[in-house]
Image 1 (cartoon, rainbow, N blue to C red):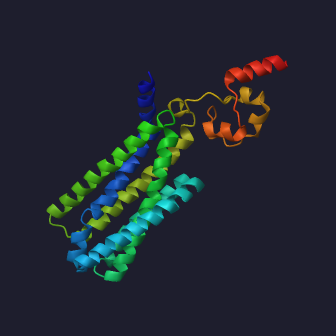
Image 2: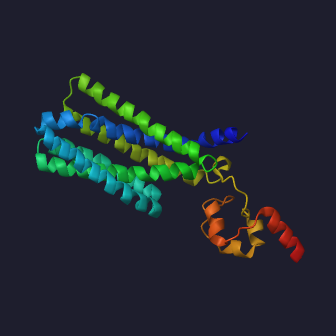
Image 3: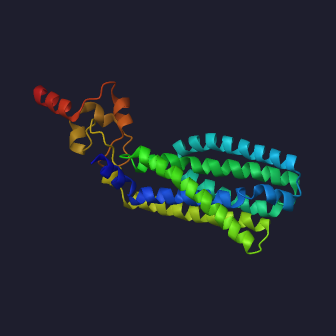
Length: 259
């Protein structure tokens, strides 16, 4: 029964859209990154030891991006996704221009790694938010989506190179995928506005009064303003509201006795 509810939760359209975003995000990344070493050798004319340092620079960028993305996601999740992937697409277009030049290319690789992982961080938070009944399963599927994008991105880059295109064409291809992600984020925003009530995404816990009538009968519930949906409440709000949250049964009995 529990497994059936978890599968139902992750089959929600909002959850599936996040998985699609994660997949395409990874496609955009690995279309270029899979071939970054031969691309730098052939187009930028870098030596092997220099390429190694470029990869270190990329690693520094993604570390900063992860830290920055987490904070931005807490601030404005969808705005971070839109701005982040627009920046990813732009950085890849710039990469296609500065590819022959060593220092500008190093800077571009750092910025690319930073903005890509800053934009990707909110996807993990969003998948858990949209599949509250199955957060572990949803997180696992999200990692699977990233891995699928890894394979698809490498395949896309291989197909382009197999067709006789130069390495410098990979960056614009990755940029195109990133801009598709931006359009899909706008669609996700539309779904958030038009599909406010979502029974499959609701929390499994019922320790907090969730309807307006129930909240009106519990004094401390009226002080909670962090409601995201009409009929659901996050378990952590309960814990913030009181050190010992009462259950529906406890609350009902206490109300009856007081009357």
